[in-house]
Length: 285
Image (cartoon, rainbow, N blue to C red; front, side, top):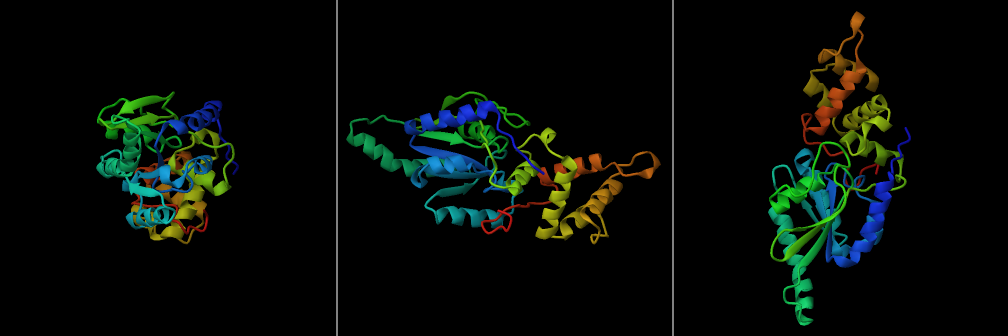
């Protein structure tokens, strides 16, 4: 399953980020807590020094908390600040602002020595599409100044957003990269909804998700859907999900397209549980 997606506006945005990097003191990279490595843009890793980088592990409410803590320790070992955030409920936002203020003390002192007493701490916030970047901005600013939506790539253009008397945020559109590091990265992005489903084989994607879940915990699918035969093939398990959920065509054949839609939605919304697809030592990273 080959997945490639790099719209022209994203290439333009990467160029803008390079230009704007010199204007900011820190960069918040918003990642999906379920797939931190896959949702991190390697181009940004090359551009942003560790001391200027803050990782916001968003959608932490959908991820396994123990695994998220492992990621925070992983980033700490690289001298990068990492925090768990849930932009929908606002959890972790105060801690994120506190981290910016703490890291900004040195910046403010530097500008104060230069006579710039009222200098703002400027922060750029970046992230690939559909990781909840705009929702996080809205939480931080406590208003709906950044456009949000359910489809990947809703945010357009760039804008400065005043957060406090000392902190300004520079918003940028979500960006991907010209070529995924490997197929598994593309699959993880597709499973979580960062990539438009129209460009991939959704049935193959559902099979990959089943394979992932069976490695993490073979009882996840069986317990949630009430399936007893978990020794079946991955496709057979998908058919069982469809059968249990009443996804039947004429003649009693299972409508696997409807079944896979249910399965993917149940994972993405957390109905299957808090499940991380990657850990710092994941074999498929």
